[in-house]
Amino acid sequence: MNFVALKMLFGDRAKYLMLLAGLTFSTMLIVQQGSIFWGLMMYSQSGISNIQAPVWVTDPNINQVDEVKPLADTAVTIVRSVPGVEWAVPLYKGVQRARLADGNYQQISLVGLDAATLLGRPHTIFEGSIEELRSPDTVVLDQWAVERLGGPDVIKLGTVFEINDRKARVVGIADTQKSFQNIPFVYTTYERALSYSPPERRMLSYVIAKPVSGVTPESLARRIEAETELGAFTDKEFSWKTIQWVLKNTGIGVNFGTTVLLGFIVGMAISGQTFYLFTVENLKQFGALKAIGASTGMLARMILLQSFLVGFIGYGIGIGLATIFGLTAASNEQLPFVETWPLLGGVLVALLGICGLSSAISIRKLSKLEPAIVFRG
Image 1 (tube, rainbow, N blue to C red):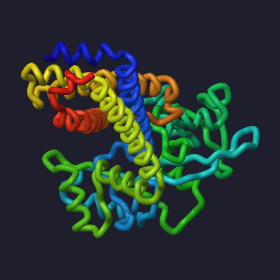
Image 2 (cartoon, rainbow, N blue to C red):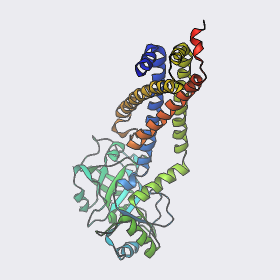
Image 3 (cartoon, helix red, strand yellow):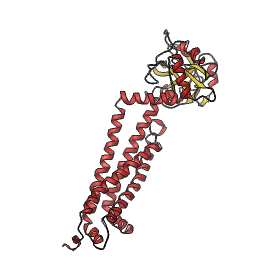
Image 4 (cartoon, rainbow, N blue to C red):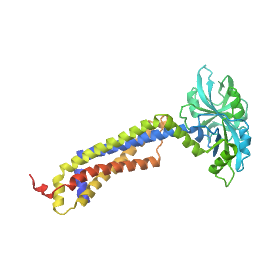
């Protein structure tokens, strides 16, 4: 019977291609929009992932990583005094203004690292050396800063520009994840970052820390909260807190969710209608099978085989098209595009749901089918 089901499916080439096109489009749309959405979420917490610190100590009322609420300078010493802390260093983070030699201005996200250890440094340096930050008036740019400040022909090792009317010399170019606001990162030492920034009563943005061996980041964060009355998060907790804030306070989740829902509805409508027409046009064939002893359950299995086979083919083609889109239109991270296994698994479940629901329409029709239909003119 499986062979008969496949012959019926591929024999009606027009409806087979229509069904395949609907499921492929649905898969491609959901994967494409889901990958762009998750790429944006990764951008939103780039300030955390680029630093890669196990524990972040913050103001207890902070909502997300770019909402800096400065701490007292004594916070570093207080955190270091908590049992289970291997190291704790200050971190500055703030948006400042860079002035180029041609007089143009560009916003930058200035990150100040502890000069002695340079903890929180970018992991990959394309050119130069991060250790050169210990020299006077030096900064390390990320690849996005190079583009935004004039391009590789203008910004290179040794290039000098100004940050709030103070000289900054480029000694390195780092690889970082792009920020949600599309503001490039510029790294320097903590003390120099304070000198680049307008003076305030409190200048310490964060304290980043690491637990000693045998203590988990989660337990250290809870201990810091209990003993210091400061906010403390693991990097994963802080990332999710930031993502949740973005979803709650922007329309990104609703917009992408609506598009994904439309993809599901379109796939459901096309496949459901096509399968129903396919069943109606083959009622005599199904009636003949029923007349020779095929049960409704067997006919239902034939329909499900046809549906899920086309679904898996459409799933593969749809993912392939979405991936090609990601490798072309989203190349060089100009457009956020992050495919994940949970996303692909979720799309597969959604597609199987589409196939199952569309099959149910046809199976309901077959359950009422009388074998005598084969004898009608």
